[in-house]
Length: 478
Image 1 (cartoon, rainbow, N blue to C red):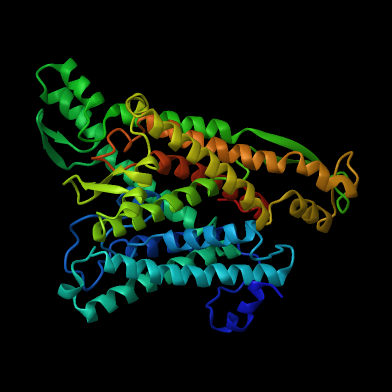
Image 2: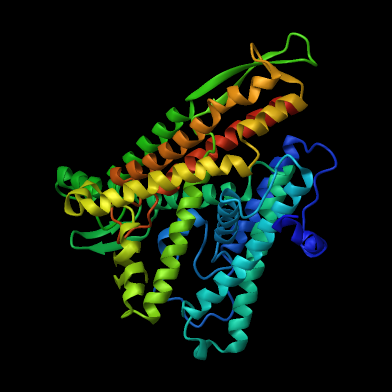
């Protein structure tokens, strides 16, 4: 009996979304996906009750876009509990501490239940740590009652996000809740940074926060048109047109790389004359490695800031990270320790000024993304052995390959595609940051979106493929 089987008695008390008893039509999937998104957006606007203050250091500032979280609301924790629980179980499965066979229905059910339960626990623990860190004010000022209410709200919101994600993944909607929330949050930030009508004051005078609106503002109000265009393209206090063009470049690059795949010719034994190609894409694991890597860094940031605030003079705490308040939007900047070396590069100048930081960050991102991509296929049911088993169950054969050699044939492509795809995702993230995609031009003043843009593009592209596939299967006409 494995560790997962110890969870069997608790299955009856863990909330679960039942599998659909009938095939859900594409129209219903779109409707449910829209309702799920509406619930998420509503939760992003509902403020937490019992907050004494929301100023001061924000432990999640650097990762809010990627974690689909919103400060001071029910979505304070975003998808962090879900992704963190998945990362922990993935590591446990990868090192053999827990044994799971995705082809066995009971193992798959127990693994999903364990991830769900751990997600609830993570929401509770992160909520407690957030309150203890003083993010909502000193506990003595908040009071025990309000602190308990805050914890209940954060935990309950974590449960809601987990159940919404499970509902979509069970087939009631399109994609997953994690992907939907990230794509929405990133798209919202890009649109806001491009068209925000808020005015800001700088040494150059009054400017608009939105890059495109500021472009027209500079063109029509600046006496020197050339100088106005220069400011619109190069300003550092807010998003500029160069950031926007870099964003478009990154989007086009990701879409281009999505087309790289190996075509495996397959035929059906049930349908005579049925011949089709099964594509093994370069981004075989999609954006999962980057989501997990970002969540890992976020948890290190969170722990480091929490400890540094309480024990800033401790040597080991300083090794984990040193932080400095920058006085803007209430967040802190990593200036030393592990947290600093895990922080993204702002631009090419950072490579020259601190090559050790650049080398460490490059090595970390590429290694972690490749590592997680390789292990993810083993527990997600997408390994060569799992794909070969699905082919046999559906009576599908690879042309020119015997059934007993199918696993060996797929083994030549799938693990390589997963690892190389993870490495490419990591490299693309670094490129997006260095090019200055919206939000990465000035790390200290603008929400960082380099990684978020990469995630959003791969997610939206995946939604397009899912939508097209479901539309073909259901033969629905809109």
